[in-house]
Length: 193
Length: 193
Image (cartoon, rainbow over all chains, first blue to last red; front, side, top):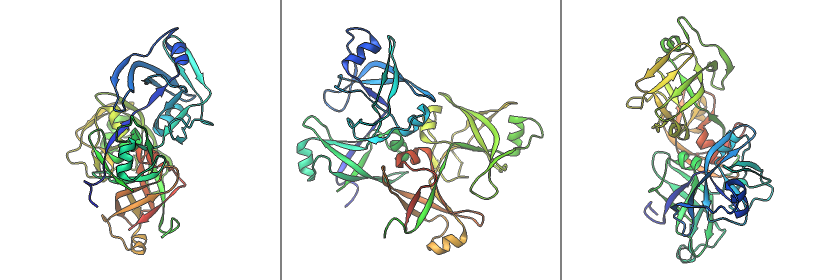
């Protein structure tokens, strides 16, 4: 097998926040709605114009981007490097799996919210549609590896497959992982099944 | 082969600076000598009490630790995450291979120094003594892989072997790599030859 087979585009997820509508209103004001600044690669998702400060016991992260639309739960996704700066190292979790994760303080222009849970480092994963999953012979929640070529070549193990009808094929890693592998948008990994 | 074979202790190299005696004096004052704060794992090397600020076009890194004793060249080792903060992404290089690398401004308590080169991201490597190299069947400058187990399991390729009589066995990676693999001091990797 060569590096042109099973190619998967790499995407780096920088730190970001998912919020409930209730918390958007606590942070930005009553009746406030998120505004779309830029569409994201995953259909329907957008980077909002709005940002909040994430305040830890040791340090804070300024202007962390909110991702819309609102969700039914609150989740703050940071790298381990950023978690160390906050003073709270986030557990590595699949998005949405926030039971038992640390809480964190959010500061917006109109108020603060103390989350009782939701600080995570996202488990690396591949988004794909059911059609793409079928063509690779993969199922949701299966774990695969992804090889990266270049100046900091490596193989990421334990990459979880996430399948949804509106997902577009992409290998999603955080900034620590992107920098450790020296890859970014426009680069490709090779799926090892 | 299982994970208990070919074990190599992991060490994370946080950002640090090597300086010539001439630049120590420019930054800290005439005739100034570095003071040892803490011995490092590699015999003879120490973390100095002294720190300097590294100033880029976009941002700066405060209180970056100087490593002693002085060397014949100046070198600033940062992660790619930190390079992005400075506004200058460092090339991935073997320590000492600084021709053509970016310069950077250093600010000490008694003066500033503008290096014309020396900003690098250290190429991941394994330090070993000639005896250890022989026992693994390895030679200096050979490249191997190292597997990491745990919550963010992966295999680092292109790990360069560095052999010196005073080197102690350790797999040296930067903070991005350590965080991407979720490993730290006390953890082990498995050498894949």
